[in-house]
Each structure stands twice: as C-alpha cells, then as structure tokens.
Image (cartoon, rainbow, N blue to C red):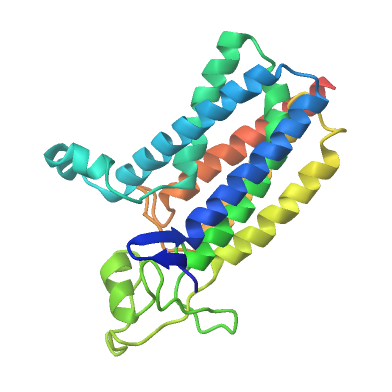
Length: 271
C-alpha cells in the first residue's frame, strides 16, 4: 500500500500516523460539539482530552508488551521493551483511557453515563478512521486467503510474503511448506472490514444520540463494538489466549459485550 506519504532524507511522514491524527482530531471535534450541546463545563472536556491522550498511549503500549513479551524478556530489559518504537494496541489504549477518565469523573463528580453517551459516537468514528491507517501501512491484516477479496501487502508491517508470515505468525497459522518463502500471499483486508463496520456503528449512534441518554448509548456502543471485534478476530492473526482458540482481544471483547449488554438492559429498564 502506501506506508510513507512523504520522505525527505531521514524525515518520514507515515500514512498510519496521518490517519491516526485525523481519527483523533475528528473524534475530539465531534465529542467537543456534543459536550457543548449538553452544556457541560468545557474545562472538564479539555482535562479529559489530555488524560485520554496520555493514558491511551500508556495503556496501548502495556497491553502490547503483555501480549508479545514474556515476563523474563521484560525483566531482562524493561526500558528497552517499554520504550521501543511502535507496538500499540487499540484495546490497551481504550482500557487505559477508560480507567483514567473514570477516576477523573469520580473526582470531579461528573455524570459517568452522560459522559459515556457523549463520547460513544466519537469512539466509533475514531476507530473506523484509524483502521484506514492500518490498511495503508499494511498492518493488522487477516489470515491468508484465496478469496477475490484478498489483498497482498508487499511492503506491509510485516509484508505478506510466505516466509515473513511463517516467521511472525507461525504459532498462529500454518502455511504449507510447499509454498516458497518468496511467494507473496493475499490476506483478508480486515482493516477495511472494520472501517466499514465501525462507520455504520457510528452512523447508528449518531442518529440515536439525542434519543438514547442516561447511559443507554454508551451501553449500545460497547455491545456493538465488542461484537464487531469478537467476530473480526476469527479472520485475524493475533495473540492467542489461555482459552483456545480465542485470542486475547476476543477475551476482552467478550467482557466488553457483557458489560455493554448489562448497561444497555439496565438503563432501558430504568427509563
């Protein structure tokens, strides 16, 4: 695809970085608009913005380290592992930001459910746009496929040559030895599937944002986003959990689905 948009000497602007920035700014702009529509203190919004920015980076890095390094590797070189370039996960960032924001909301005595409803559409559109960045840089793609929907990433991270896939995902998938390492394989473009699905989720949430209040919209977001991630993981090559054949992301998704379902059901009964 297009991993680099601009290169001047050693200075590089990556397509992934640009799309993540666009996704984040879009999410912030929409959330701020809804925050003002609900007539809340804008200073609290600015504080939450900073908290999310920091805690999401920390959380995403920590979950990546948990999924990809053993305890021994971490203990032998903790700073090298934690400060290495790259290596971030969406769920780590989401959970890290969620935990930090809940603490802030409790301290400031804000309405947790109101804040959750306000940011739900923003979370959906941010995720949708961010996955475009993953597609452009050739990251987070799915398993090899012979389907006409399959796409090869010769410059991906990592590229989808048979040898590269064996080296990086050999514990998750089995590529026949008869396929030479130099063969460029097509994989499921799961980034595009997620972009489309979560954009539809965004449209649904945006349409319902004035009707579903008191935590119902937030519960619906958790329910839909959790289901989307749980299902798409069957096409991806991600870290397996202690429950075979589920991935770590699917275990987290199940917890999010359950939490979203409970919140949505309870809030419907309350109103």
